[in-house]
Image (cartoon, rainbow, N blue to C red):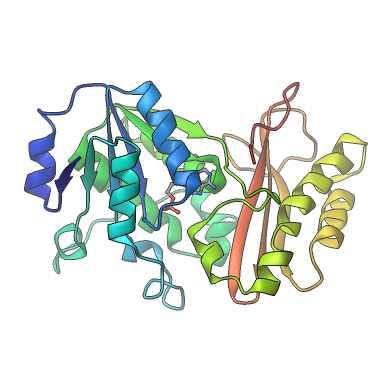
Length: 283
Ligand code: AMP
């Protein structure tokens, strides 16, 4: 596996890697969800590049940037075993030099749901992904359905800014009990970990209620009642898969979305609904 830690080294990869190049940006602490993205990327591309960068710009002042799990050595071995061709490990001072002043506004999609709770989060995501795309210049960008709103923000950005690449959404990988894999699951205490799969069950209950004719308000109430009593719900809703605007019924491609706090840890999850097709998430 080739490793680039500077922009110059990353640029030197471009002529070496056969096209189409598939790119999987991550923040590291890699788990089976990330590995699924690599697996899909390898099948669809002639070569694959992964980046690991805990992007300070997408964390709020009171969020977990300092404590975010980091395990570069472990990640490197996982990537070697997954036969990734190149790893880009930029450092924050080169990505954001002191005189850095230009940001990408994440637009309307970036200001709802996660964008309400985390006001500058998607600006940080859109800015760093724009920079990474300019550096790596991939042909296909692989994103996880787990972060559906992030994927919608980035898809729209890529269209709006005429970026010359395709985007592929990869279904969510779950633990056996349904909990969506996430680097942040490591923060959960034993009790919180036991309660956390109720977020997924709440989304399934919401979907089932809608399918049985409940209104969205009734279905969201059922979701809240399904969530563990020890958790605090943030939102449950149904949104159009492309615009992330709330919709009332599952009549077109949509995400059933939810967020809840388990102690100090906030988890998000969603179901991708394609009318006439069953949910594609896998355990
Ligand atoms: P992160 O390292 O959390 O920034 O995630 C990097 C990429 O992996 C993003 O595109 C995520 O949506 C994706 N991802 C994270 N968790 C999962 C999962 N459980 N299943 C599939 N993809 C995931």
